Amino acid sequence: MSATQSTKNNPPHKSLSEINQSIDVPTDKSFFKNLLAFSGPGALVAVGYMDPGNWITSIGGGAKYGYLLLSIILLSSLIAMLLQYMSAKLGIVTQMDLAQATQHLTGKKMSFFLWIIAELAIMATDIAEVIGGAIALNLLFGIPLLYGVLLTVFDVFILLFLMKLGFRKIEAIVVLLIGVILFVFLYEVIIAQPNVPDIFKGFMPQKQVLHPGELTMSLGIIGATVMPHNLYLHSSISQSRKIDASNKQEVAKAVKFATWDSNIQLSAAFFVNCLLLILGGALFFGNGEGLGTFSSLYNALQDPNYAGSVASPLLSTLFAVALLASGQNSTITGTLTGQIVMEGFIHLKIPSWVRRLVTRLISVIPVIICAYIFGDNEAALDNLLIYSQVLLSIALPIAMVPLVYFTSSEKIMGAQFKNKKWVAILGWVATVSLCVLNIQLIIQTLFP
Image 1 (cartoon, one colour):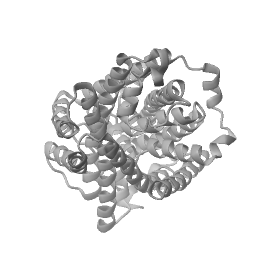
Image 2 (cartoon, one colour; image 1 turned 90 degrees about the horizontal axis):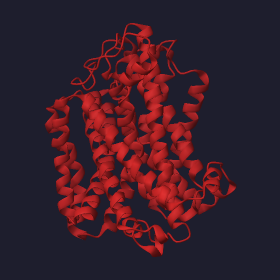
Image 3 (cartoon, helix red, strand yellow; image 1 turned 90 degrees about the vertical axis):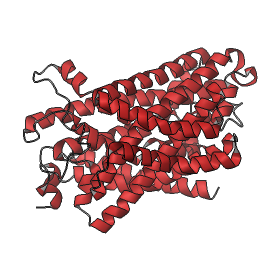
Image 4 (cartoon, one colour; image 1 turned 180 degrees about the vertical axis):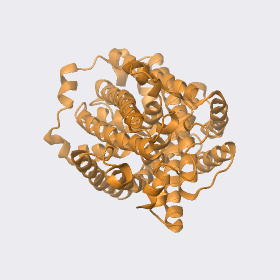
């Protein structure tokens, strides 16, 4: 019997103990009541797929290549749904998060190393949120970037307050912010009047994607979409619903509705990313050179030379509001994941306010240095954001490989819940493909 199996229903400590098994679920068979009760964790996961790190890539892809790369967004989203399904299932079935499960198969030294990599990945994710939030504050209120970065530290205290209100309130706020982002870009795309037949054509893979420029942008979209912290996060917060882990029927029910929740929320993220690319294609295709920063996009939305007759200050203001909402959302999930990996890999539990404050302070240090040296030069922050995405690409296999292995193992998951053969094959194909693509992305980023 493996170490993981022996602790399957008796982990050393509960993952995110303050919310673990804290939310009641219906005992009847009503589909919609159960779906509502299990809805929420998927939203926290989905925000990672529409964070500020994705925006430049998606809008830039539309500005450079029209709707050609919509098929890449579709492929990335399908892979994300597969991996997040495995992640939620791992947490529900084993009652351990991915960090705990990985720790049981490795020694202390290896676990410590993996924890460092996971922390660096979270820091890289947090850097993107800090930069996005600071730039949004600068665009909306004229706050200098350095001061905006410092203000993002206080996001931590907002999260601490929300935790006092209960995890269900956090889920509701995240869904609300997702709604704001979705509304903003849906409105802006409708105003932009894109060519609908060309949009549908963009979802069909075409040979042109293999050209060097399109390939680079495709790698950027995929590399910025699937992030390692989401796999740790989902395996933990999927355990927030109160079920009897020894009852296979209850476990099967939880897996079923967690999958529904995840796929619905990731579909919303897919829709947002499509809207971002469509907006870039409708407004800036053929006229999108130089639109590589948040400020340049903000300015272009109110410049008739770029956005034509639909250009207005309202469009640019809504863009900045959505950017701020995106940064706030991702801050919540990043700080939660920091606690998960620290407790899971090295069994270190510290007060939640210390954990979240340290995570954020470590993340803002490189941003503060960059903002202090370069002032309000946003291009410098954008370069920092790009390199943070490279670090995420390096960390991704460390999360993906154990996830697919664990969920495909009958010893760990049991015969009923292990991945079906075709699911396991798709998982390994996606893992290997993403690893190869991310290696190419790293090479192309570091050696252009």
